[in-house]
Image 1 (cartoon, rainbow, N blue to C red):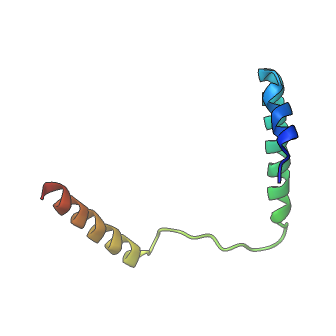
Image 2 (image 1 turned 135 degrees about the horizontal axis):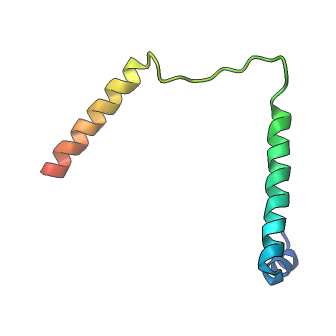
Image 3 (image 1 turned 180 degrees about the vertical axis):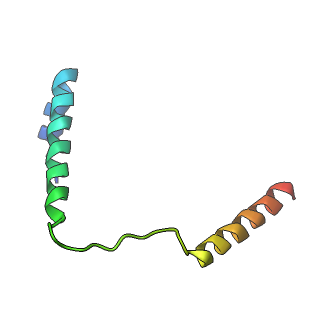
Length: 71
């Protein structure tokens, strides 16, 4: 949990200092994300190609929504 003292200190920072803190935190988060992906390893990636059932479901939802809008 973040202390109220830390939040208070952050609120008192100047605008450039706040941007610097944001850059620092975002950079650290990005580094942690990069560490999750290991080299020479395969990762599954979802693709919308051949997702016929998903497309059919979406069409049904869109048609139902269109009928409700006109009702």
